[in-house]
Each structure stands twice: as structure tokens, then as C-alpha cells.
View 1 (spheres, rainbow, N blue to C red):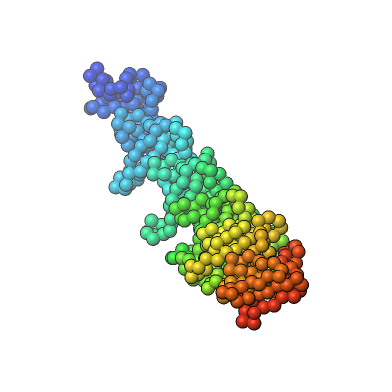
View 2: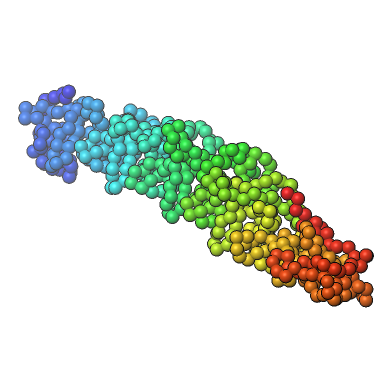
Length: 512
């Protein structure tokens, strides 16, 4: 409701000019402007001054207050609507103002936006110069986490709400196509020690990314259903609705996992640390396996992740075709069982090399007995399946010779028997040690070998050392003609009673 006051005045030309560029003539769309005692008033045709209303001039609107006087640089209320007039008294439209709230001049200044009709934006989303801004019910521009519910309820977020939660930077602009690190929506400013998380706000929509994002700047990232980026070991699960979801395997203060292996089921990914987060793909990563046990630095293992970021392992998909394997170690010249029990393993080619992996995705290294064949995978930082001749050191640093098959279905398996006239047992070269020539027995198969591991197969020969006959063959001595045990000795031959045969178990102890 506006008041009217009768004012009789004589207006000089100088007084008219004092209003300046804001009001340039008596004629106005609503009323006539006149200056009285140095202040501007707007009168109707009856000579009554308008109060508490807008009058216009030259396409702009100006507000007169309770006493009819032009209002400048102030908030204006017109019913339930709020406006702001500038220093010349003109209503602000399509523009911003940094000022204190309308009802508290002692409060901190806030940013407000006034729309094309001049009304303050409240509980609204506004697009300004291609960017999106949010304003609460008091018109304050919001920063940080914002929640919307339709178009009539905009406020600071008190929790995460799917499809209705957004993030605005310090300028108030909604973040789109960019990363933000902050506390969870609804975290109080008083919670100084609250954890911070990385969030990715999607292009165009500004919604926090959830689930698997396969191409963020060419990388794979995984997010939980609250939009938090996950890191370290992450496994795929299902939510209450049966949809795919992702869960982080939590770490302790030493970056070791403290959850049972049962948590490590389904598709698994490795996403670096909390400030990295991209899932490894077509890459190796060395880390700890998630287990509920203390682990040392040396317990880290190598894992392979495919082009989709998934860990390769002998899981249920391939378990039916998996091989049985036992871990071995090379100590004091003997390849011996570590007595760790059975593991299921499968072979996979990575970068043109063959590797084997167990159920948890660990790359095999050193010696493994796989389906009763001995394989060697190099040191802990190697892992590629070895073939052909290999010189391998034991724990004492002594070097021994091995030979592993180079082709066929048993490629990589340690040779047992004759390979290029050398005798091997589970891949290890069998050599005479105490004497220049000795007998070596593999099961029911006996050979004559020298200190180089070469198999001897001459008849009517005395194999001597320092003039002493160690082994004597005759015309009745036989040697197997071909196959795995070619040159196996048989028939008639004599052995020096002081000569003992080579004990194969001193070289390779196969007990499993």
C-alpha cells in the first residue's frame, strides 16, 4: 500500500539538473519527478507524492520510501519481493551486489543476484554468463556443497542426495568437468579434523560422479555411491537395489589392509593413493594383498591389471581350468618345498611374456611345482616364465644350471631326463661331484654323468679318474636309444665299489 503526500514546490532549473543522468525530465511513465529541499520526489497527476513504490523514468525504475523521498544504495522491499537500488536510485537488474543482509547491517557481506525484473534471486538456480549459481531462501549466493529439491528449495547441503547435490567454488559458480577435494556434504565447519575426499563433478550437469568412470582424461576412476573417489584396493559389489557399486578395502595407518580376504571377492581394482586415485590399466602394480595379518615391506607382490582396470587372477571364472601349484625355494643348492600348501594358478601372456598368477592375483616368482612340473619365474621383481638354459643362484649366491622346455604344451617346465646329451632333473643339471664320473639315478633310470652333466654312452670303456677305473662298460652294456631317457645305462657294466651314485634329492627335493 502506498501513501500520498500533497507537496507544493517551486522547482528551479538548477534543482532539476541536480538529479543528473538518473532522471532527466519531469515526464515519467509513472508520475512526475520534482526536487524539494535537495531531494527527489515523484508526484501523481493530482500533485500527491508517491510513497513506498517504484516510479520510472527513461526506462529505469526508482524507489521512493515512506516519506516519498528517492531511495539510494539500499535494500528495498515491495511486498514479499526484495530489490536493491544503486547510488543513483535505479533498481538493479541482471546484476550482482555484495552487501549485508536486508535485516542485519552488522552481519558479514554476502553476494546477491537481482534478476531481469529486479527481484532478488531466492531459492533459485541462476545461469549467468554461461555459469550456474545457487541462492538460498534469503538470497545469499551459496558456495561449497549445495542441495536442490526441485526449483523451490535450494540450500547448503546437509547430506548427499543423488541427482540433487552440487558443488560451487569460492566464486559461487557450479563446478563442472573438474575435481574438488573437500569434506563430505553436511560436514560442520566445527569439525576441523573431518576427512576430505576427492570428487569429480560431471561436465554440463555438475553432478558428482559415482560408480565406474572409464574415461576421465583417459583414466579409469571409481567412486562410491556418495561420489567419493576410492583409492587403494577397490572391489565391485552390489547395492541394496542390486546395482553395481564399489567398495574400498580400508587401510591401516601403515597402508596395510586389515580386512579378511573374503572382502576381496569379485572384480578388483587398484587405484593408487588418496591423491592419485586412477585405476591401473594395462599396468603392473606392486603392493600388499588385502589380508588380515601384519605384513612387511618385503611382502609386497606384483599384480597385473587389464585394459579395463580389472585385476587378473585365478578366480571362479577360470578356476575349473586352473593348475595345482606348490611354492618352492632354492636353499643351499636344493630346490625344496616351502610347505605352504596348494594354490590354484593360471597362465597369462603379458607384453609377449608368460606369467602365472594365483587366486589373489599375485604374480608367481622363483620356483613353483605346477601340475608336477617345476617352473622358474625369476626373482620377486621379474616373474616371467623362464625357458631354455638358465643360470640360477641359490640363497648363498652359488650358481647352478637349469634347463626349461622351450616349446610344446609343457613350455617352461623343467626338463627331466636327457636334453642335448645333458642330464636334468626337474630342470636342474645333474653333475658328478665327488668323482669325475658318477652314476645318477632318476627313479628307475640310471645314467653315467661327468662333472659337466654330460651323459656318457660308450661301450668297452673304462671311465677313470687318476688311473682308477670308476665305471667299466662292455659290449653287453646297453644304452637306451632315444626318448626322454636316451643313454640310460643297462645290460652289463661294473662299478668301483667305492663309487656312490648321485642322490637326486640333494638337488631337487620334490615332496608334494
